[in-house]
Amino acid sequence: MSARLSGPADGPAYWFIFSGPKLLLRGGPTIEAPFVAAPEALGLALEQIMALGQFLGRPAFCAQAAADAPAPEGMFWRILLGLDQKAGPELFWKAGEALYAQHWLRRSRHCGLCGGPTSLAPDEEPLVMRCQHCGGLHYPRLSPAVIVAIEHEGRILLANNRRHPPQWFSVLAGFVAPGESLEHAVQREVAEEVGLAVADIEYFGSQPWPFPDSLMVAFRCRALDDQIRVDGKEIGEARWFAPPHMPSRPHGVTIAARLIDDYLARHGG
Image (cartoon, rainbow, N blue to C red; front, side):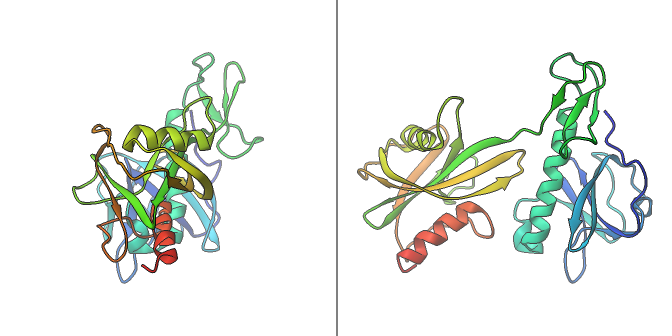
């Protein structure tokens, strides 16, 4: 599979270049993606180069560098998580789009029908791959997940996932299983992780989450009682909180932070 450009960028462009999961950034007064006239100026061997539309009114491209590639002078590699609080939401979301594109290009090099090599299909929607042998089309895939703020008598339930640092709490989330609705996924995940039954499930919003390919669909709901029974597998601890006594929690542009901020705004936090 080759996702290389048919020709060079027409003038200076922003480049979103990854080494594994890390993004190349330019340091200085502000953190930004490299803006260069040609990618050769960076001195990196690049693969999976593709156009990424516009960023801040200028052309943007994404590409993959070697896993051990040294950062060019004045630049550094950094993971995306937390980048929104360092460089702003615009850069974070465009970098997320680039990260997903690179993940999809890497995962779809061969046809799932016949095993043949694939290439980008320029006559289809962006990122659609066409098998060079059987002609089968492969469309970008997303993994839908629900994320939910659970309230009971003015309190919000927050949990510490075993993958997170101790004493860091957030709302519950989980992937949608085949054959279930989003609302049923909310009920199942809450029951499985903290043993609660919920009602009044209300849509809140959605957010792409390119780690690697999720679409987070957020809800608010009400617990029918407050007797928490953690599963002990994914969830290490879960508690009810109310302002002003809130734990370490998500901030920035994540929809988890937005759910918690919404609760605090409605309860004087």
